[in-house]
Image 1 (cartoon, rainbow, N blue to C red):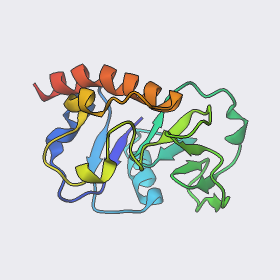
Image 2: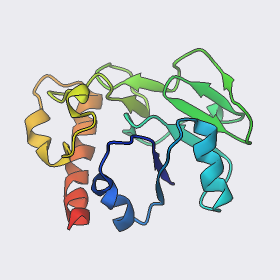
Image 3: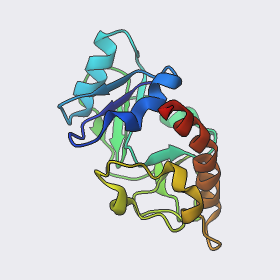
Length: 164
């Protein structure tokens, strides 16, 4: 696993958790998926196959069917690479689902928020939303939002400890 970020105004301390968890991190001036993958491959940090997820995508449960990962492809918010070639765009969204929906799937996006959390209100902030977990918990959340809330809560101590 590795984390690459191409947001220029983001403060590095938001990613201090990567050091604590021994996860390679790179703040890079590129926005192409293949460029990020090539960077980590050339440094022998990762190898094929590679699953690349958008920053707002979380695995809320274990993958039950890995048969989709048999050749390179790209869908909304996810790219899977088996080699360093441009992936085939499948023009569907059969891998990543909205966390507010009722789909019982592995990969969920919180691009449109979860509970009371509004994603756009946190873009390019110098502070982080992790420690504010209780502000976002809502009573009318979907099962996927509830699972994301549990993960968010579990991540809070690690994130705060990494900041030191």
